[in-house]
Length: 222
Ligand code: SF4
Image (cartoon, rainbow, N blue to C red; front, side, top):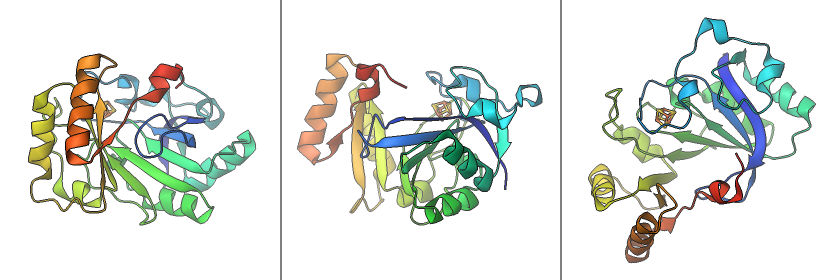
């Protein structure tokens, strides 16, 4: 199976449970969810005129909606050719779960990579069972997609952006009836402003949840 890949780069995972871990980010093109504050809007459309040679996506893309079709074998060959050394792979987007990620995550896991998927939870998560699934729920977005209960059930980590109390209430509603035992729940302040951080810290302490800080924004890295 081929996937439209927007960019591939090696960096440090900046947020969530794997914060600080060297990671290869594989960003897939395509997302219909429509978050107004999305910082990767260039991944929304998979336009034929933006299709490029695979070599061009194995470098930091910046904010261009170009993409190349690669299957798992071709992607792994590119990672090796590029000399990437990280063994943790973050499959992100766009919304990666619009695709069946089983062939990709299975092939990567068999090569010794630890896969992590970052998804909005609005599509069924189809992946190898060894994959770490991070759901960052996107509620009431323009595209009209609902956060799916099976995605929350599959999640190893639920990472929720927080600015105000309404975001905590929103998360409480989503988690109603979900067994969270064994899952890591992270609150992530939306901005670096003290108000959001203080609220997230207060709730994390009260509920024994984890605070996720977007460390890459402080380090000024991708
Ligand atoms: Fe952007 Fe992610 Fe929302 Fe899609 S789900 S619109 S890529 S933030």
